[in-house]
Image (cartoon, rainbow, N blue to C red; front, side):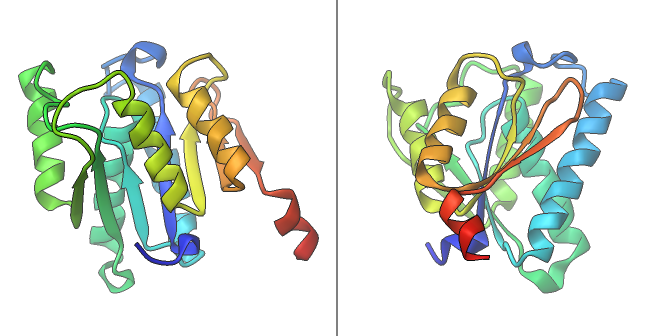
Length: 185
C-alpha cells in the first residue's frame, strides 16, 4: 500500500452492540450513517484516498457503503475502498439479505484482500491489526464496551494513529492524536 497519511481504517460494533441492532431505518442508525458520511468526507478533504473496511456486520458494512457513496459524489478524488476480509467464508452464516449486501460491496470494492482461507481463533484480530498497521487514520464507532472494537482502538492508539471515535448512542466525538505529532505542529 501507499503512504499511511492517505489511508483510513474503520472499526466498530456489530449490530448486537448498537442500540438500533439491525434496524437501519431507525432514526439512530440514520444519524450514524450521516455522521459516517461527514467523517469520511473530512478525511477526503485531508487527502485521505484509501479506506479499509473489515467487512463485518454492523459498522464495517455501514462504513463501506458510505465510502462508496462518497466515491460516487467525488469521482475526481479517486477514493478507493479496500475490503479486508479475515477469511473466505466470513459471510457464510449471515442472513441472505446481509450476504447480498456483503457481496455487492465486494463487487465494487477497488481491492479485496483476503487474509486467510479458513476461520481461526485469531483471524478477526489479525484482520484488525493488518488494517491498523496499514493506516494513518482510524474512524471508530465505539461505545466504550469491552470486545474487539476496544482492542482495535487500543492497538491503534499504541501505533500512533489519528483516531476519531464516535459514540454510537450519543454521536459524541472524541479525537485522539499521537503526542509526537501534536508537538511537531
